Amino acid sequence: MKILKCWLLLICILQMPPAFSQRSKHHAGKTKPSNIEYGTASYYANKFQGRKTATGELYDKDKMTCAHNALPLGTWVKVTNVRNKRSVIVKVNDRLHYKNKRLVDLSRAAAAKLGYLNRGLTRVKVEILGMHPPPH
Image (cartoon, rainbow, N blue to C red; front, side, top):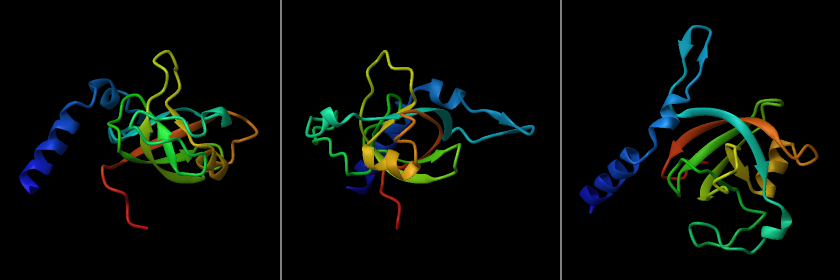
């Protein structure tokens, strides 16, 4: 069973699009790890409450979840609001519309904790934590 889990994890990693790792930024002459990405975050409107996500679970505005187009479903990420440095840990359980240029779409609860409900959008840093929920 452990071998099967290792193979599945390896397959997920290998299927990660190369564009994700190529988006790493240079800062102060040093390259940031490829598991960090910067972009714009939005949040789900209330009209999506109770609708199915890409994983099949129902969207709940009070859960800590997000939509991301490049990461495997079930990936845990830490999202930090660049403006105020607030962070949340969320699970990727949905996809954005393919024409959407935003990096991540957060649940209402996650957006509230990041402090951008009134703004609608904010610049964020997204760090990949892995396929297992981080310890609290």
